[in-house]
Length: 152
Image 1 (spheres, one colour):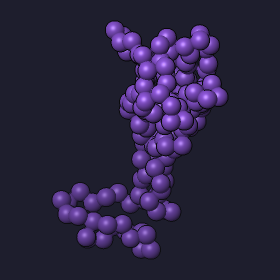
Image 2 (cartoon, rainbow, N blue to C red; image 1 turned 90 degrees about the vertical axis):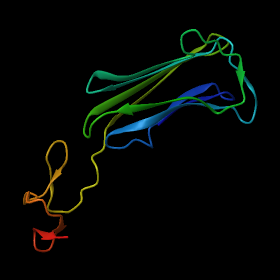
Image 3 (cartoon, helix red, strand yellow; image 1 turned 30 degrees about the vertical axis):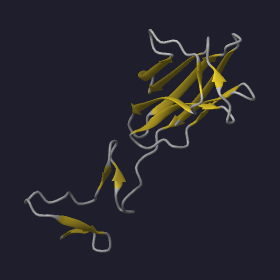
């Protein structure tokens, strides 16, 4: 998931297309169009909540650091975790070198993992087979046609 500041248009956006069921890799990205970018005075913040609880907070530059300029597109990365079906809110804030303040927000429900078989139901944290997995120490595979576990 990317927080993107486009240096040509002055727009701040969030791209949540790379989220998964259990979280996402986050990147603070400059769309600099091949140019070296002056970062003096630039500040950014990205916060993520899942079901109203804060699960990620990134402030740039980090405490004690001053940005000058960059020829890099990705200026920071992080990892955020959530669970399937949680309501996720991503808030981004950026103060430009000229003092302009920009915000962007993305809201979505964390997706569930793909359903492994049509007969399995969602159990709140994972997909549950209609017949419990045998606990005899052997390896099994699910047979959807016969609705049973078969020795692997």
